[in-house]
Image (cartoon, rainbow, N blue to C red; front, side):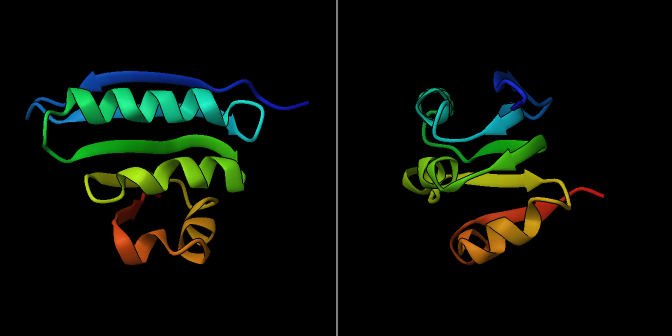
Length: 101
């Protein structure tokens, strides 16, 4: 059984928009994840925004595909489990990624 996806948006003290996802991102909820990314992108008003994936347990190709339209303006933070997936997908070549330990 998959862990439901939750997405919340907030701001860091410096004003940067942060989209925090938790659970699993797969084809069943990738559209909701894409919507949350678009809303965070719009809310950031031209600035870089952070996508925090440290509480994401799994992401499939549908979830990865939702990230690509925003790579020019996002910074990914992931857990060590997801870092290799992001690297294999090529996201570390086209956007800033960081792994939290």
